[in-house]
Image (tube, rainbow, N blue to C red; front, side, top):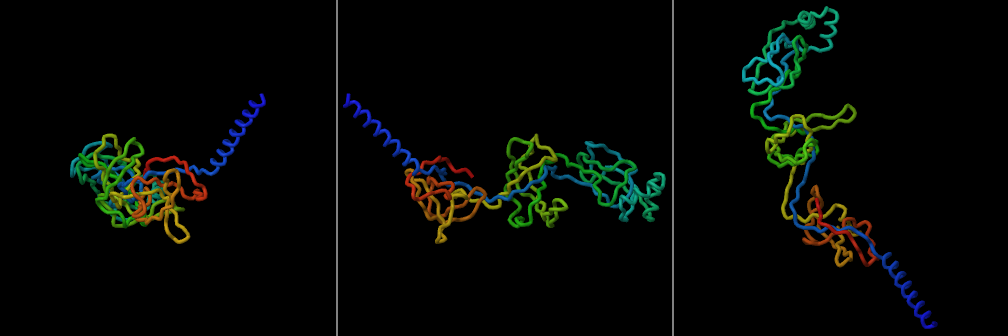
Length: 325
């Protein structure tokens, strides 16, 4: 019996020693995430947003101020070049809409005489005609309605037109945008990406935003590669303009690169469950990560975040997956 007791306590002691050793070993293990890096295609991206519009849209802007006498079309009607859309009584002088309304209230609604008296200038009969053939949209003018110089009267969407995007690009990055650059387009109302191309860049900048927060931007026209049947004018589109592209690039996550006390940049790679520090030479920064031009090779497993590495601990067990930009 005594022999069995000795054997029993010996086994228990061994088990306790193994468990204690295991806890000590676990305490010396860092759990980190690694990324397998491979040569890839990289691009520098400029992000901007805009609206889907019809290409070839012609907007009719009021030449002066006045009142609408006749409108000969309705929303959705087809017109040909030269068709008369509306006739107005118009003056070339500038006029404030509030002045006309104020005068109208005091003159019993005789709009024609009110405009003439308010301006004290000759009013001429003006015809607005179609400058292109297409479909009438966005008629803002109504019979007996008052309009002012610069108002949008109507739009014509050109026959057999395709879609394009009017996007506002911040002035700080517009210098990198060029006609012909490819664009990835995420139309918020559609479940898939659309491809496009920079078609035109405005020659002037404008201020956009609210009264409290303004930003100077330049309008960029982006053509849509195909005439997708489920695209609609007015949809919001988030665009990624590829301003620089390069093949066979080794990219690593931004968080994996650090600098040591000597100013040299480095990353940690996982090798047989150990972290090894590698001095690297960085190249360009792309939207998906930092280019490594020296110090790594395809297939290396780079630690995602080097800030948590404890070099006094020998072993590293990590989650490893392919690096995605």
